[in-house]
Length: 171
Image 1 (tube, rainbow, N blue to C red):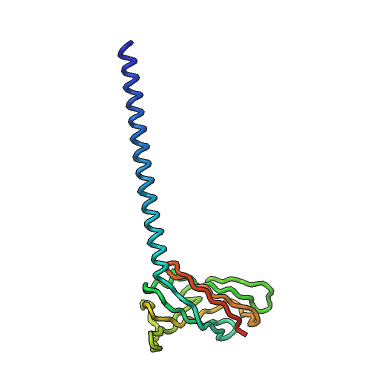
Image 2: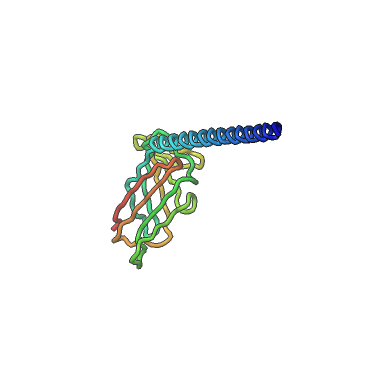
C-alpha cells in the first residue's frame, strides 16, 4: 500500500510539473507574439509618418476623367502602385446619391508624368518610384459622368498606409 500511494503521488507531481511547463511555454509564446505585433505596429506607424503624401490641384478633364497632383512630402519612395488605393466619391450625373469608387492602378488611374523639385517634368515609365520631394501627375478614369455642381472627394492611401484627402467642386 505504501508504494501505490507513493507512485500515485509521483504521477500527480509529474503531471503538475508537465502542466506548469506547458503553461510557462504558452505564456512565453504569447509574450513573444505580442512583442512582435507591437514591433510591427510601431514600424507601420513610423512608416506612415515617413510616407506623408498630399493631393492637390485636382481638376475635371471631362465628365469621366480627373487629373490631380500627388506630392510625396515624406522620406519614403512611393513605388508599389498596385497597393496604392485611389478612392473617388462623387455624385454621378442624373443621380441624387453620392457613389464611391475604388480605382485600380493601370486601368482606373495612371501616372502621366513625374514633377521633380523646381518644376522639371519627365514622362513616367514603369518601375520608377516617386521619390521624396517629387510629385506625380495622375489621371483617373471615372466609371460614370460627374455632376459638376456637387463635390468630388479624392482619397489616396499609399503602400505604407499614409493617407491624403482632397475635396473640390468641379463646376
